[in-house]
Length: 304
Image: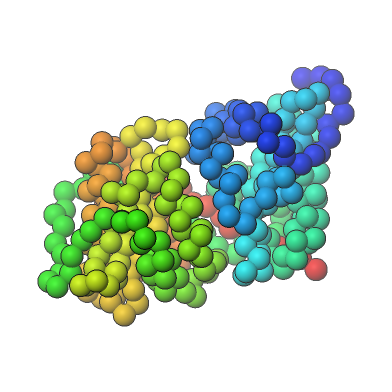
């Protein structure tokens, strides 16, 4: 393809929404990394609390056409940002990715971040070389796991009950999420505002947010979500158990409740991700029938 004009880098504008979705989906049709997205879900992602796309999302553009992007999601409470990005296949090997990377790192420093994290599929060899050249180091692996079917019946330990999310449960879920994942690698404590926003997204349904309770106390949860594009695919988005209640089979029970909900809605494929260094979680998921289908590599760069 011949160059028609100079490729420039600029920030996101609200009028870019449709073109941004088109760019992401065109890239995913070639790379097949599961990043395809709907217009509605992209709009919701851009509206997340604490995220400012007009400042933190950059595009490479040629003759009015978007050809690449770099997205910086701030988690400054834990001193980091999460970087995402890609270049259209027709515009690769022209230095576009390097330019986007440099601008993203410059913006990350200006935001006050100490660390930049970047998640890459194991098969994305070219971009792995790019980030390694920029000083990123591989620090973690997460497994993508998938489930096609399961036959296990749900057995709830005596004294506990299941119920769905009710309006006003945001604070309970936020508190439990933060308890369950305290000290986990890469975890940023959630706020009630962030949890409320997540629960109101179009891919999330109140019946698919399942709690285990002991009396009035919520002690375990499983939050399911739909795939933004692929019908018949659902996700175990989050799940956890109060540390004081672990070892009683509650994690298995609430996981099975989430799976049952998704399968009753006709989801033929269910997926989740898990830290490869979490043997308790990986053992649980394998015992239910999940199998590893991919590996996400987490890279880290310390900013001076």
